[in-house]
Amino acid sequence: RLFDRPAAVMLYEICVERRLATVTKVDGHEKRKWRPTPLHTVELQKLSSNLLRISSDRTMDIAEKLYQQGFLSYPRTETDKFKDGFDLAALINEQAGHPEWGGFARELQAGGFQWPRDGGHDDQAHPPIHPLKSGAPLQGDEARVYELVTRRFLACCACDALGFETTVDIEMAGEQFSSRGLMVRELNYLKVWKWERWSARKIPSYYLGEQFEPTALHLHEGHTSPPSPLSEAELIGMMDEQGIGTDATIAQHIKKTLDRGYVEKRVPNNTFHPLPLSRILLDSYTRMPQAFDLGVPHLRAEMERDMGKVCSGQMTRQECVDKTVDMMRGLYRHASVNSRCLHAAAAAILARPDASSWAPQRLSDGSRPSCGKCQGLMDLRVRPQGGGGGGGGGGGGQPYRVLHCARCREHYDVPGGDLASHGHRCPLDQFQVLSVTNTATGKTHQICPKCFKDPPAEATGGKAVDGLRCFACLADCPLASGSKVLRPCPSCQRGELLFKAPKAMNGTLLECSNSGEGCDMKLYLPGGTTLQRLSAQPCAGCSHSLLSFTFNRASLEPRLRMHPYDACCFCSEPNLAEILRDCNDTADGRRRVALLCSRDPRGGGGGGGEG
Image (cartoon, rainbow, N blue to C red; front, top):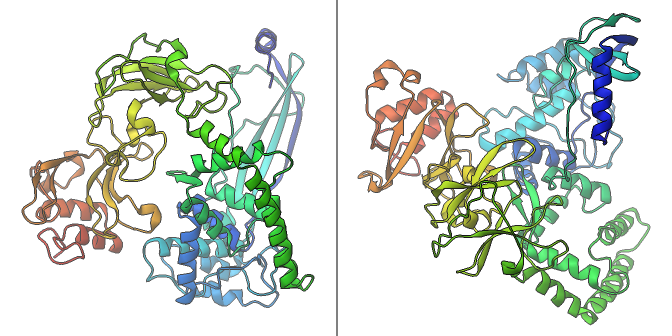
């Protein structure tokens, strides 16, 4: 890897001219992929957030409920090793009849069992988290958390995955190159731990001293990128590493920062982004004279250590309280004396900058998009380097750019990348849409300049979103390909039922907007389905808007292909209910179809329900 492009091109051309490569080393050895250790609370929260997209506080609420119902062991523990003599065989036997992982449990019983690894932590109070009995009756997020715990338990009772790795080093024009191949021999624990993969990598067979002419030589160009925002799993890991919170309180700490408006958590990756309040506080701390440590983790970590000393008898409760109060009293007095720093930070962050004097810049197509308020033309403006003031920013070292309307004296933040005017206008605010092209990947998406930083509730389903792209918008718009709001969710009665066409999957689905907060309403539709909500035509049976479906007729049963679906409702169209049942042919799926197709949102009878 070189950071000098001319030097890299020169070496590449030398290699092309020399043509021959010589094998200087061939090494093969056994490769082992370690099975996981037993599960403790912090790891459960990280896995649930990362793999299931369930927040840490909700994960603990679910785990507590499953514990009280006898499905799981006590979920608040720092222990990640099983004591000698623990009856693991009985726990494995409880899972032997499960339709999904029962076969793997029987493999463990037949000789595949190995005593779990020692994770090195023992709180001397509770064992690692493990399943106690079959979770067959569970549904929704409770079933998902139970599955996570059970698969982790079975995986830690299995053998490591085994493979054979071959490393080949070659020399070409004095430059050294290396390649690795992997042959997976035994998956073992990976058979049940479905969230982890170990893929084989094929390379040709080589012998020492062999010379050959490569079929192709490539010079790849890349670039560094700034770190991405913290995910909840990463935040939990950092808090645990810094000693902030315990296995029982980390989730509550995170929830409190969200409830108090310090940060917001954005879907779909559950990443945390600072809000103005937290930025004001942290900026004010750095402005205050002398050392002011309220914005760093050391203080909270010290408080946690002192409370641990109380538990171990090294410090009395009163000594711990007195020490903490004295420390906080001094910090409070210091902050009060320097409150002007707080005011200055708030003024700097909340003040809206005047973009009229910033340097103008042309869009990549030379156009000037029109303002949705006055229909005048807007200019792209770039804040001078080091310029103060509030607002957003390009992030990652990119300049802060806005679209400025001189007539309205307003400006609108825009993201990094090449910008060009799009022919469409946003139906929510009449602003001309922009096409944004990522210069590194070449991929293009669209944004509305007004909705990008200030989206209306109709575009987001009422959720806080900063940086809304058209593909994620919920409005009735041809560019809003991500989701459409159809009606209130019939399951939880709190969220909105959305029609989604995710780019990551070859299909469409109906899903509740509260899917990440516990609602299990999710129904799949045939691939290629499109849908329009006829807001001006309410259903006579349930009063919700009629819907117009366009299906790929080849994906339907022959007897369902000729029927029109251009103005129908779930509650009154039995053929629509049958299409849904065909695509969701499980007990849970049929239950959700019956609930959706009922005129009674709680599940009473209706024309489209199951017979």
